[in-house]
Length: 331
Image (cartoon, rainbow, N blue to C red):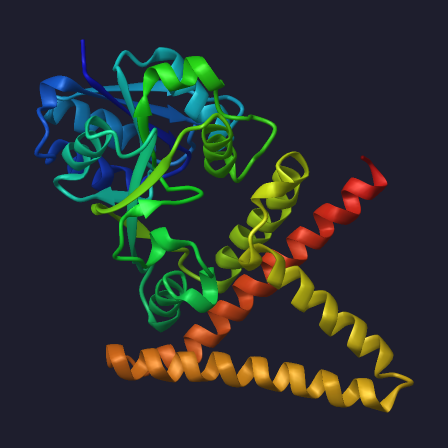
């Protein structure tokens, strides 16, 4: 029986699933004590072929594929949990590349009693070629873009609200339940909210590191953050006490611009306030872009980071507002 079950939701990940599997195979933790369960949403690209080729070339690592006809992440995680055998569950993502000691460090933190759920930091990598992809990766690790989401940039260990790709005892699922399949995003945050409400601790340890591929362009980034904002409100309806300042700012900022733009039609003072607010916002983003461009010696970041962060803020805020409106129309 394996000690650790690595569970992976997957759909059309031909480009990255092989990188993940190779990283799992290269772990310092014993392969004989691991199994990998990939819950695939019936991929239509070459994902299954890549997995099958890996299984043939690496028979000493148990890799199993289970179907996820629902094609959603929480359903995939639940499908994998239902067929796994390990006493420890470790969740990864098909866009991730865990460091060689990822599994060993996760188990060490659990066995030391640091947290009920333990996880680490993302080292965010460009999801494609070109200056815009590099800028999106940099923005996704910048406090202006992600607020206090510490797993994207911190170097300090400690208790947090949530972690990406958590590791926890299989018995925890028996106690608090599976992932909520009615939330198509924010499933990790909701799961960890139940852990904390039940008296558990979610622990972030920077020694647990994984590479993560950001979205390759602004269109994909906008879709991602719209989805984040939309489903964040649905989760906050159930757990209002989990609201954090970084989650409130984008919709408040977006609504303030809309309200001021309407008022500016017939109230001159509103035009001044709108200009000041928008101008200050642009200046702050440009300053962040220039600072990162100088620091990383990449001139493309000067324009790319402001575009990426603005896309994240507006898309997240718009998704949140749309979710609020739809909830009012149909509680």
